Image 1 (cartoon, rainbow, N blue to C red):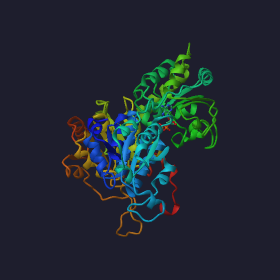
Image 2 (cartoon, rainbow, N blue to C red; image 1 turned 120 degrees about the vertical axis):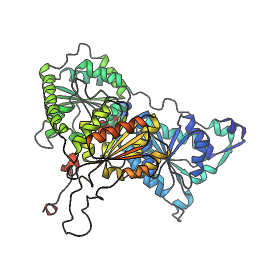
Image 3 (tube, rainbow, N blue to C red; image 1 turned 30 degrees about the vertical axis):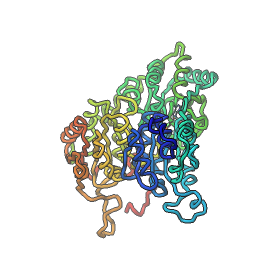
Amino acid sequence: MTTETQERELTDGFHLIIDAMKANDIDTIYGLVGIPITDLARLAQAEGMRWIGFRHEANAVNAAAIAGYLTKKPGIAMTVSAPGFLNGLVALANATVNCFPMIMISGSSEREIVDLQQGDYEELDQLNAAKPYVKAAYRINHVEDIGIGMARAIRAAVSGRPGGVYLDLPAKLMGQAMDAIKGQKSIVRVVDAAPDQPPSPESVKRALEVLKSAKRPVIMLGKGAAYAQVDAEIRELVEKTGIPYLSMSMAKGLLPDNHPQSAQAARSYALAKSDTVLLIGARLNWLLSHGKGPTWGGTDHKDWAEKKFIQIDISAQEMDSNVPIDAPLVGDIGSCVKALLAGLGDFQKPAAEWTGAIVEKREANIAKMAKTLDANPSPMNFHSALRAMRDVLKTRPDVYLVNEGANTLDYARSIIDMYQPRKRLDSGTWGVMGIGMGYAIGAAVTSGLPVVALEGDSAFGFSGMEVETICRYNLPVTVVIFNNNGVYRGCDVNPTGGADVAPTVFVKGSRYDMLMTAFGGVGVTVTTPDELAKALAEGIASGKPTLINAVIDEKAGTESGRISHLNPTSAATKK
Ligand code: ADP
């Protein structure tokens, strides 16, 4: 509550929306102004909040989503009505799918006209359009409900399984006036927005029994484990049990990737040969081959392997989603991990036969990969470019790494080691393209730390205009574009011999670096690993907006990266 507000006899929707956010320690809004939220944005800034303005709503919403993931507070995005709302909706759905807590607030047109479909400016029934894609959706119709409406949105975003929330604010609401004192009393400060949810004692006992009887156990850490921010307890569980562990991509760095118990470079072996898997905040979705089939030691893709699963998740519905879960541990990860630690007793670490076999496999795979990484082809390929980046990033474990693309994503995930939790931010559960600049801006604004956004040239295109935003706020973001002239690669040809290039091909030799210089940032084109390493180190050290256009062999790269099996192909196009 501001003194200024107290002195006014009346307050209005504009002020109460801002007051409700500030009362809940929300200090930043990611958005794009226009009718009817321009004055709301101005007021937010005037009242001391940070307004980060974007060039497209999807990027603002992605920034808010990643801010939510990194801080465990709801990230806030704000858009205009209908088209702005729809532009943001893709990213809001992506936040929900990834379990990131955020609230997208959109201004909307007059209810009476929308509901009778009488054709208002930017008319759309936004509340109902949002519902299938979010964890919760609310509309506030009366000024006195702003406090409660905001409280409901905050609690829905962060409690239980976090997710995206939509909050609809009709234009008329903002101008509604009410008594200032009553208005302040209507503001709700949410108490304990995401309460601990300890698991039941029986479920802990059951999980410990299964874990203790395992001969070849493995722990799988997912981004839920990273989100929970109980890094010390997770490390203690891994180290006290001596169980080899694997990390899903955004959980990399929760324990450093060079930890002696890491089975990362022996992933296929560990998944197929293990007899028991402890999943911590990781879903058995497509990214884990649904927990069945050859990846897990089964014979065909529907086969349930002889394997026991223990799963920690805050959502009870997640259990048995793909395969039977022998020991479900439903609760928040902090409480569940602490309960397991408390019951470990004289836990027998797995036999050296198992852990030794993993280490042997891991070292053999690392040695094999080293040969590929050390080759120095000209032009550069993904491997030699990534070797250069890996070596620079190893010296700066505090740097955030945003990563998207097909090959650029797949290779970077396995080649670039992470050493600190929540530093790797990528395409996530959908494997979506377009998160790049939004996540980079969200991470930089939230942390003030340097960010490197490693982008395939195609992936970058979805959010590329935000380089202007990066320059406008002078953010410490270095964008690296692996430029191989196209989607997947740049050497496909049009079989008809016509003038149009093939569907996967871009303008050859594009100078993405000039996009950054256009707005006052630093732009560099590099063609060798040494040049790339130098430019990257300089970009990070300078803290200046930098874009490195890294020219990669246009023949490097495979169709759809590592998920080409999901891409139906026609025999006809192979001719
Ligand atoms: P990944 O893609 O890394 O495998 P997923 O997004 O599939 O990770 O899984 C994350 C899981 O973590 C979700 O099922 C979600 O319900 C769960 N989760 C998120 N936060 C918590 C928490 N604090 N405690 C317990 N489970 C959580």
